[in-house]
Amino acid sequence: MRVTRSLASLALGALVAVAVVGAASAQDKKKIYLSLSYSGNSWQSEAANIVKALAKTPPYNETVELVEVISGTDPQAQISDYESMIADGADGIISFPISSTALNRVIKRGCEQGVLFFMYDATVTEPCAYNISYITSGFGENTAQALVNALDGKGKIFLSRGVPGNSVDERHTNGAKHIFDQYPGIEVVSEYYSYWDDRTTQQETAKALAAHPDVDGIWAQAGEYGAIEALRQANPDRLVPVTGENSNGFRLALANPEDQAKGLKGVSSGSPPAQSGYAFKLMMEILNGDRELEPMNIQYPLPWVPADAVQLCEGDTFENGCNAFPDGKVPSSFVTEVFNPELLPELSLTSALDGEPTPGATIQPLPADVVVKAPNEPGINCQRCEPPADLYKLTKIEPTVKPGN
Image (tube, rainbow, N blue to C red; front, side):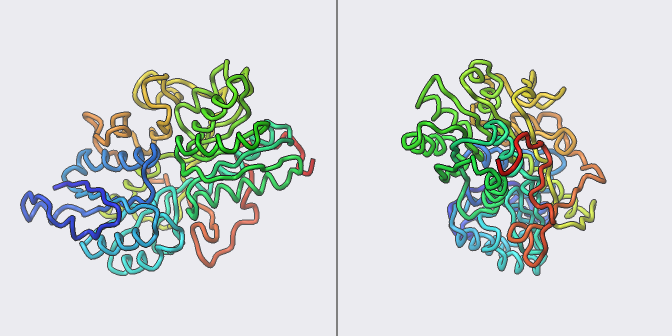
């Protein structure tokens, strides 16, 4: 039996009525809940679809019962849903958490009852939960330095943020401001929440442009293609440097000679939806007794695609170094970092777009030595811990402008 459900914040008692394919087979399956907090953008849909596609891929299609729950942006709703999942006998909960701290108490209760918790992308600070995330790999500081370099250390900029209170947004923004604060010539003239959504980003950027039409650059999280669209509508002949995440439209714009001639520079980095699939496979390997996992905080590598590195794919997966799809093959908001040939060879475009398995694919074991331990970051992935001395070190780019100038 496999069923996928979505709900806002209803008690999971409403999910009890499911079709039974025989008591014995049902008992043999692992009951896994896919718990989303924020939803409604391409990233969240793709991340959820990846887990759904893997759960339909042999042999998981015979061993996994997957239930999807969407709680919304209220932490209390996700807490309530976690409680219902635990009471319903969950073997594992794979989740995008809305808060790094508010869910801790219910997570601890679940761990004590034998539930395995895996968080992807966003993180929690409860020690018994696994965090699978790229956010400790330096998106904020590296993209901020890229923007500073593009502006030669001077200019008015916008900060387009994510969801308030979420660990991803906080870590990104803290890292970015650590860099911007070193350059007196950089002035943040507008800072707004765009909820990692292209449409919202376009609306909020348009408001900021109305007040500051002379902006020199934009530092953005997911939804960055909306910032490009706002710039185009405000002045079709003038673009500015933009750093953002991994939407297909953004990568195509970065590589477009016409947009470059109008002033667009930047780098595509940010959050891979593939983190959800990696977390799901790690969880299943533990539940199946195929892996013992010692580190609780596991780092996913940071994508980094400057304009001159954008390469179009000919097929439906990342092959031969490609990292974007031709215009019209996927929506402009499609988040490109859905594939990882090493971790998720089972996936294809149909997996990310529709949640369906790749025909003929079977689940491949993760490499034995694949796990990379993430550094401790207080308030992000640990509670009483010391951060590394080089917390905001640059790993992808070198400063071309001396700090303080």
